[in-house]
Image (cartoon, rainbow, N blue to C red; front, top):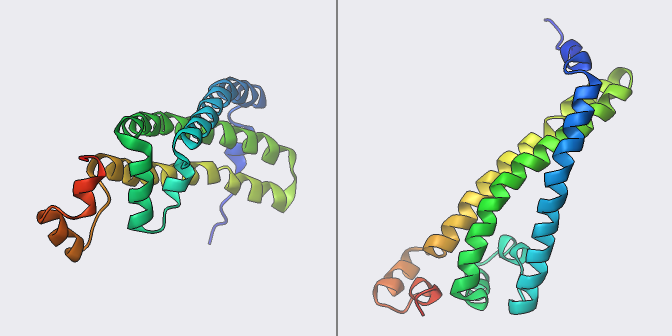
Length: 167
């Protein structure tokens, strides 16, 4: 069985090109990070709940409470913010991957091989972030999914989806 090696990634692309790309990708990374920090603080100040609270809402009731606290205009703005996050995930994956590549190239032996595997970590994080965005956007657009009992309540006009953004 042939052992997988990282001969190409040790040299291609050249360190200068990788460093330049990392520096250039750090600019949108910095400004988008700043955008998200400002957005989170404003959302917390206006409603008491931030995006992280919504992402970590473990129950349907908590997710409804957050969306109601945000209100219709804030939910619409957060839909825009999550579309911006789709750009951000490409930027942070590129920036982090390039930085990890530069560091891994400085290591030797087994540590270097492990470092080269870690270059894939930001890509995996971006993939999972994209999947999370799909689910969060779906909940903001359509409301929180409900089970069979919740569906019956919604059809009678008493369920949480009826109250969410239509109130």
